Length: 118
Figure (cartoon, helix red, strand yellow):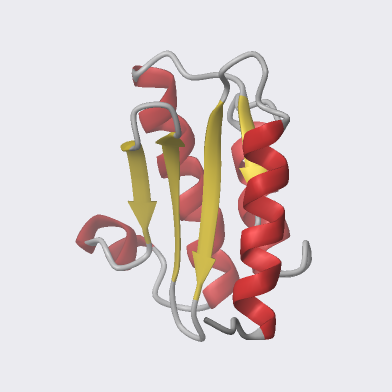
């Protein structure tokens, strides 16, 4: 089966993260569309999503109705609060095929400001 460019990049990045995961850290993934952004913390050993946050959720949509960058900040804050409740402090950041720029960078800055380390 032939993979396209984006799928190859995702596969390459995720495999590097999984191979370098010697101390069993959790993985923070980001997915972004033209209007929304979502992030989740995944346990790769058990293949389970532990915490997630998305801009599609009603409480986040009510707060930020103006710009997409504001949505990224609120999603980052919500994910960090939910991770702190579950006592998660250190994760690996999996940006997928997205550049570390714009809304993805704003999301990670909000996560770092609220206590997550990666």
